[in-house]
Length: 468
Image (cartoon, rainbow, N blue to C red):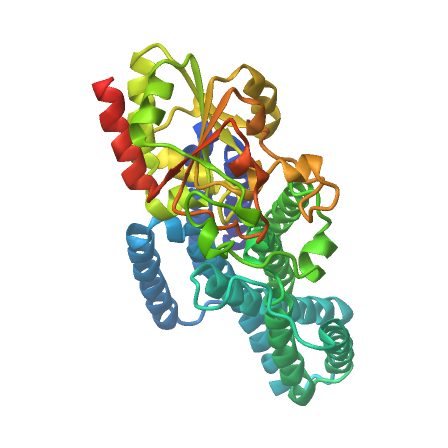
């Protein structure tokens, strides 16, 4: 077997591991195994690439691997679970930027050889990788800024926004065609710069409520740009891995949009969501929009309700992540289970700030996988549920999405918690969610509001339930 045959065999093994890893990631119980298999596959692909005879020097490669490994390991260990979406956005952007830089390097090398023009396949691959990778890089940085609250979470718009974006798209395409027909970095560099600006302009008008969809879409962009880079370099493993990421990211984006009853076009161009803003000073506690009354409960009131229930469903949201209350919720659930109370967790597809955010948080607290119920599974159960405890969720439980045709949320599938006998909402205040829309659930006579930091509120509930 020649060296080339061995490399191709290693790429085949890596590709199989990637596919198996993706398959196992489909279920929480096997997700860790899938992540490990994918990591081993990447290690096999890297070692095989380093064995390629075209590698002339290992010095810079070793330095890059060392620096990257340290940054990755330290970041993964130190990142808080609330900041995981930001980390995903940032790492995704780095992948897109890497693909764009490789495309630029290949174009510069071809220009330096004065070969006149690129063949059609290489030209399409280089331009696609450069443009899509640049958009993914800058767009992911903006998404990171919004999630990290460096930038406002609300949509940022400007006059003639869509027209200017359309002009930028046309300019990028024209420069890409020109740079393909004749090697000239005076066309390539402006193309790359406009693509970077286009990524910024595309994500700035998108509100924080839509960030899970945006992250998923940008992830698919990075995968597709990596696949195009594989064609440029003639690397089969990169083509397969990039295609898997691109395809899975596209499917996930469609699923997330469906879960919000919104088209991808509406997410990208609708400037939806005004950010998490308070309704009014009077709505902070005990009052609401139009001075509608709410039922404010004490920890003792809620504890008694929970202690004598038969079925309890917890609904986690981003507020749970911010407060890092998942371990307290798990402790509370354990106390209820000792009382022979049936406990479940209801997971909405777009709860949190990235796909699967709530699943990750609850898995960190060792919540059993069989207690995690998806929206389609749990909705029929609410009518037989004694108490629903909502911890930091807002838009995904708003009944206006089902009942009010005038609401911007109308048609979005929700967790139908209002069908339960009692609803308890743990919130800091009466502030709206990231969609900026008032929640009628808070004023329902069956709803009790327990105000305060979620972690502190859950801790008080644990103490009170133990005392009942």
